[in-house]
Image (cartoon, rainbow, N blue to C red; front, side):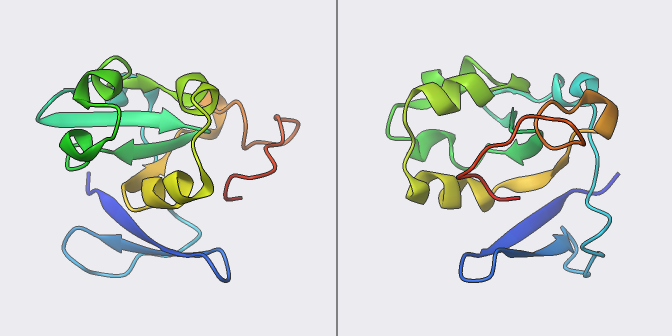
Length: 125
């Protein structure tokens, strides 16, 4: 299983998926990770979270987080959507989060980005 990174282009909200080896991936086929797989990434040296059905590897960001590493580690390996939303993150924080994007939850585990799911107005589509 290869990880992907994402480059956010805020002017057009388009995403360019690239494998860790630098080879382009199709925009239509981002990597999928189940909640069970994400749960294995729950510590300071390997930290993933889910926000709005997207999976983020925030390992390199933990020590840069303005609220401290402990805040992020509380949600390591789990869905952090409610915590992310409840703290009132700015649009800059949302754009910063995009740098750490590695994939999506499978459609069967999604809450927000699926037909009939909740609509969030200020998060990337």
